[in-house]
Image (cartoon, rainbow, N blue to C red; front, side):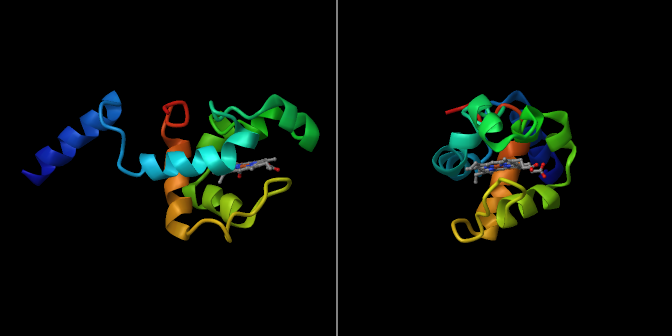
Length: 113
Ligand code: HEC
């Protein structure tokens, strides 16, 4: 029974029918804290990549490079900052950061309002 429930929620997630429960808060945090640099589509705001002089792919959270990184590495970048990326440890709890990592790793999550 437990297996079946897990399988069903897995299918629902894959189909994008049910947004994972983390999404609402993570989505709000993303919009208020991250959109200015990473954009509504998470592909990075082109003007910001120029201001920071970084390769557009580095600010594109949907890029293969970023998606291939371990959750712990992405959480660390958000927590401590990285290069031109500011640290968020004073603004977000570890749990909120973990949820933002899941959010960033959910295809299309940032695009959904
Ligand atoms: C002031 C602009 C700015 C804001 C705001 C910002 N970022 Fe970034 N972010 C960057 C830049 C610049 C990089 C590229 C850093 C590098 O690789 O040098 C980056 C990189 C990243 C990476 C990839 C890290 C890696 O290891 O490749 C993640 C994940 C990320 N940001 C998530 C977020 C999240 C989540 C938020 C909101 C809580 C956020 N960023 C807010 C500028 C920003």
